[in-house]
Image 1 (cartoon, one colour):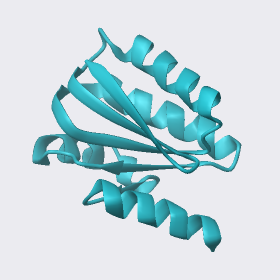
Image 2 (image 1 turned 90 degrees about the horizontal axis):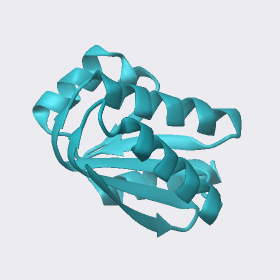
Image 3 (image 1 turned 120 degrees about the vertical axis):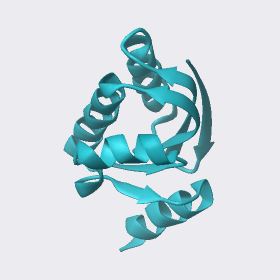
Image 4 (image 1 turned 180 degrees about the horizontal axis):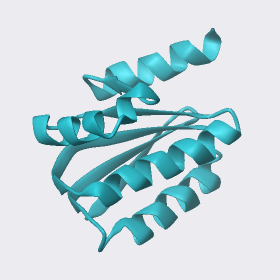
Length: 117
């Protein structure tokens, strides 16, 4: 799995590519945390549009970043899930605490709008 990072204001966008499984989550977690710290990002968007497979360890990476950001007033959004990945996250209850947006643009707009409120 690879991660392509983008920045939009204080929002870090983590575009995940390939398979998100127990073999790659430790490095992915470290890369995301390091990049967030380096850019001073307070909000995070996970873009799953190029993820081909995800197991339960992917849930852990999402929830871990959520807990870390929530503690400092930051927020997380998710976008681009295939039907199967969206189903996994829904069954795990992820969408009861983290918002899902249909597009990256919508997620950026949502987090920016929420910041103003």
